[in-house]
Image (tube, rainbow, N blue to C red; front, side, top):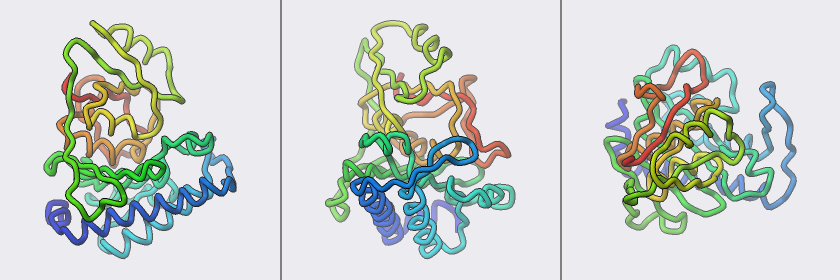
Length: 263
C-alpha cells in the first residue's frame, strides 16, 4: 500500500483522527493528575508517564489500523532501524513539548507523520489542551477542527502574509546566537512571537505567523507531522541552503531549517 491509496480511505482517516484524540486524552488525564513520574533519558531530555502512555496508545492503534506499516517512535529506540529497510513508515512523537507539559503550559502536541521515500507526505497534530486537531500534506491540503466536531466538515487552512510585517516564531526553550543573528538580518518590520512544540508550524500554516528559523538541534519526529501540515497549507520547510528537509536519515537529527509561509 502506498501513501496515496492509504490516505484516500475516509474510514481509515477518521479512525486515525480518533486515535490522535485518544492519545491526547490520555496525556490530559496525567496532566491534570500532577503525577508525571518525570525522569531523564540518556540524552538528558525529560520523559514522563504521559509520553509513554501516548506512545503505547499510538503504537497499538497504528498497528491495528495499518498492520503492514512499521512505526518509528521517539519512545522506542529499537524502532530507529526501520527506515534502513522500509520506505513507508509512521514517524511519531507521542508528546512533543514535554518541557511545556511539565511546566503546565498548554503548548504540547501529539504528532503522527507518514513518511514515504524520505519525505513527510501526511501529518496529524493534536493539541490536547485546546481540543484541536490539524492534519494535511502537500498533495492533500491542510485542515483543522475541534475534537467535538470530528464528524463535521473541517476548516481548510492556508498560509497568509500581512503586508509590511514579518511575524517570526522563536522557541520558548531554544533561542541561540545564530537564531538571534538570523532575526536581526531580516528587513522591515519584524514581530517576534514565542511558542513551544510543533505549534509554531501550525500557526504559520493557518496564517498567524510567517517564519520559524530553527538553528538548533531537533529530531525528525519533532517536525515531520507539522511539516506535512504546513506544506499542505502552502508553506515550506527548507534547510538554510534552500534544500529539502528529509526523513529517514542515518542521523535522526534534523539540519538547521527555516519553516515559512508566503514570506
